[in-house]
Figure 1 (cartoon, rainbow, N blue to C red):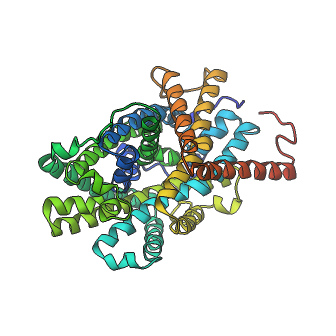
Figure 2: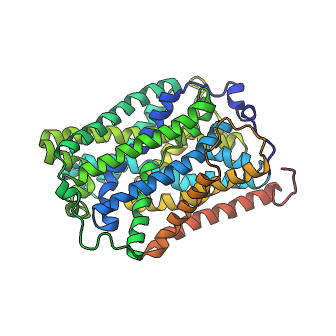
Figure 3: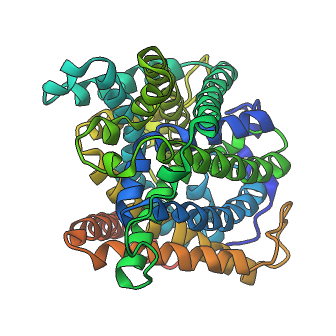
Length: 473
């Protein structure tokens, strides 16, 4: 296991003038929430309703919120204790030992990130492109139209991020405000136009508990957790956060609570205005652009056109926030010697990891050419084992073997939230295996992780590193 880790030992980036601490609590909340909301509820509510075939599917929001809060406490404790660029990469490395398991698991995290993180960013770009199809229907007639537009949106976000962190933070606040206005408009109109008859239009046998019910709930919760992804985004910018011991935990928890309320109210608004049976029809306008269809029913064509533009701004904010945070992962790994050194350089004048940003942007553009629903399932499964499960186990081991290590933020009721999060993630991981075709996504997740382990062992053997050469952790 690793030696005791203090806040000072992981802030070398700031001490050597690499990255500047410019981000406060408002920045942390705006970055997290922009990532979390994004296109999430605007593209997944119809799919969530389809998992259980009716409004009863909305109970998945409650289950997902519990899992997000439990796991958010894991990120809050680790982010406060180890505030450094790279987030989970650094957490795994420090908790499990820099020279042994920590080195290997951190490397695996970077590897899976190349297969899952870029897919996650691509969902927002694709969602933005699909909503453009509501305003420009002919776009959907071209097979590659939406995909090329999504790649172009990613390129624009890449250019917008190519600047100093304080400039990025200001633009992020503007985009965050746009996201809040979009959500507020949907919720406000939903509360005044909602039909209880539509909202409570449960099909026959909706509450019949059994295997189909639990399987549907598992699938719905998987999609809900996709909507919550991003509550940890500020952890990837740890070297750029002011007073991280307070800002990171507060940013994580506040973001989860606010987004939980926003997403659930948006889901209720959609379901109470547009019949759920219409929404779950694949390929329909209500399935592809529920936000625009919803606002057309409420306010007419002008309202739906404006909503489409606002959803696109929200989607761009998510792409922007994720590319900002995830670009620090290859950078942190390169500084640590676990990735190509070329990506460990900062821009000479703007002081941000420009090479790492270019890598992430390029991979996201490639990811834009895959199917949206397949992307969501594949990225969730690939992320669960190598990030969420591995990180929870790391915290449990770190607490056991280093009880005196500095902890500016301590998880309440430890270890209950960590154990609850671990059980929840494992349950979601096995859900696809219980349904037809789910083995393909399981194979993707296990296959990419397995290849990552093989690649690590090959490189370790060539360098004579652990486990092929004994070293002190």
